[in-house]
Image 1 (cartoon, rainbow, N blue to C red):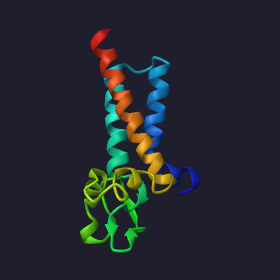
Image 2: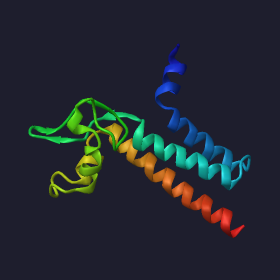
Image 3: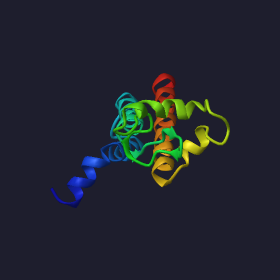
Image 4: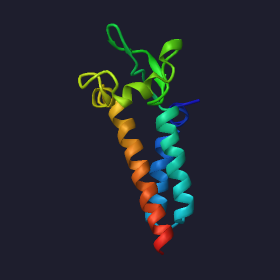
Length: 130
């Protein structure tokens, strides 16, 4: 599998979201299909995007590889601790803002979730009011 295949295997949610936005803007797909595309891409960023673990440990944030903003790394205690980190239970210095802007990958995944949710809201409004 070459460079493009490896990229598509890791970043399929980004590709789906971008192609969905372009297809919807060109009026190739309707809002019903685009809502599905947005939901799938948000699921990708939350559960499957290749990121770093954001679980909080004794020595700061975990730096192991993880999948998605909510799922943790291979350490059993870090599974689903991303949800706790995003909730901000530990205080301002360790809250959701520091977890989401930990590095470039987290920022792009957070932006992907925001774009996906906003796109789904706009597509729902388009579907309802047209």
